[in-house]
Amino acid sequence: MIKQKINEWWNWLSRKRASRIIRKRLIKKVPRNFELKDGLPAGCILYNIPNDTPCWTVWIPSEDPTRMGDGNIICVSKKSGKVIYDGLA
Image (cartoon, rainbow, N blue to C red; front, side, top):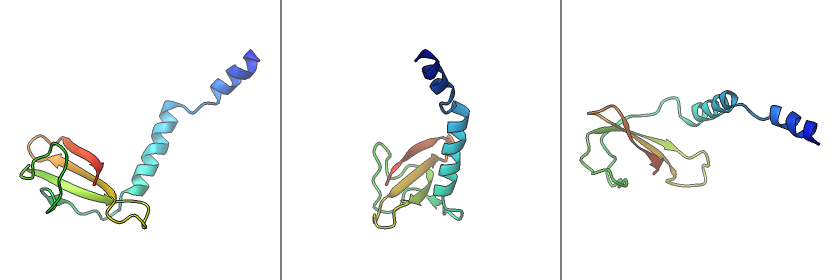
């Protein structure tokens, strides 16, 4: 019983391998020719981000083509270079 549990533990996915799997998935999700927008898109309201925030924005559509309007928005501050929003559109 103990030997079986140890063997199961050694077969678990490592942190490094999990990181590689996640990176591969994210790379597949992001369109190759994404378009950066200057500022927030018109009519877009993001939690805790004022509409006049100087940023670059990209919209990544959902993998599910039947879900209209869904996707992720990523905003990068022009001042700091930090991601200020990464979430659902």
